[in-house]
Image (cartoon, rainbow, N blue to C red; front, side, top):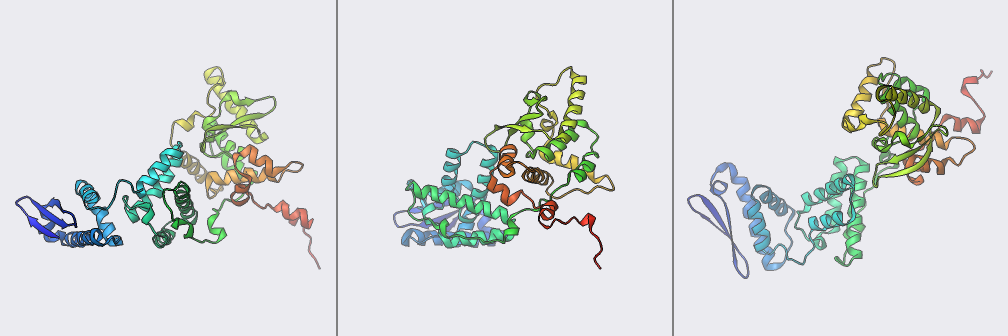
Length: 387
């Protein structure tokens, strides 16, 4: 490998077995003292590339990171390096292409695509986008997920690992790769680390918080979250026409994943009362209630919606804001249905809330005080002093 410096540019010549690869960099990269560290890294990289071409060895982790730096600073040089130095062949399935093809072929939902893209970028940052999938080893994946374990929440790391395993299994089953290193990667967490704190919000406590909201639309929406167990964006799909006022049911929507109607769900009395008030306001202003029930959801972002509720509740001196604001309301609705006497609460909660019952077992359902009282036959409120 040799350097040649002309008037304006610096050329690097990489000696490959069949040819010489000439690469051009700005002259300052090789001459300015401030770039000495980069120059040394480039020298190490292209010396490794010469050995790679001659002996078939894999690039080191440091060389891969330098190559990614070249990609960011000098994309044309990067493309020429990849193409002319034999780092990739046309028939090899590379990391980024594997993710992109899988995402394009399997997902339409923007949220799901975004989550998979984040996982892709984490792996690309570690191994480089042109790393052949077949050449990524279990030890490299394990090292990456150990590092991610130190940076991200346990549940987030688990999701990234699940997607990684899913990708490798997909291409193994399809015959594109013969070895599945992801199968051997394990990241362990204590059970309580994987489940976010979603406390049960008693209806009495919730009502005090909801009364801090002066707008009837937003107040009704907050009751909707607590009583229907809806995810934050679910009510965007609900319309006045979906409500059966006589039966007090609503054909509720689900916006996560494939947008669809869950089906007819019962409206709790607390929510029904607020819905009637909000309907009357709409009729007074527009003559009739039709279209989306909560147009405010389309007028502001999800983050600002949460800020709106939290700021108004926090302003009240005797009311506290609970953690995991929307998820806690969803979990509380699940718990209420499961604790209702005379019904199959576990199955009905899955039908009316819109989730897998097993998922609710782990993430949503709570043990309530009345569960203890049912077994002990003891109510602390009626406790008498024992001599």
